[in-house]
Length: 96
Image (cartoon, rainbow, N blue to C red; front, top):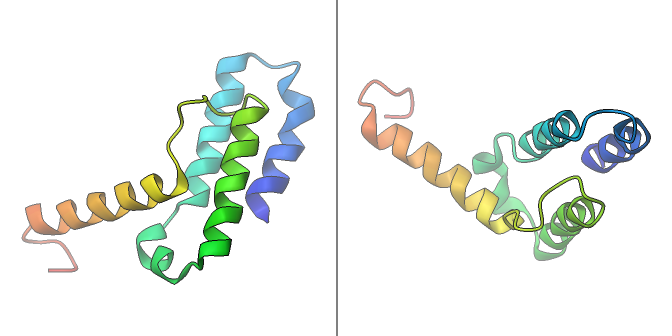
């Protein structure tokens, strides 16, 4: 999976780079992981969700994400809520 290879490719480089930059890079990787998740998260099977969660758990365990980082289900729900609120609150939204 792209996200896992992305994390492993930066593992070596993060040892010589400032920590804040390293965390910023990996949060961007999480953003790529949940990009457009509102459209595809409903089709993800339970075992696939578990695999996605295990990627986040590994990233947290290796110090790439904080320990209090949200679960994959919370990320999906947050993405859905954001899309829903943008559609409801904007009468000119393309999905209205």
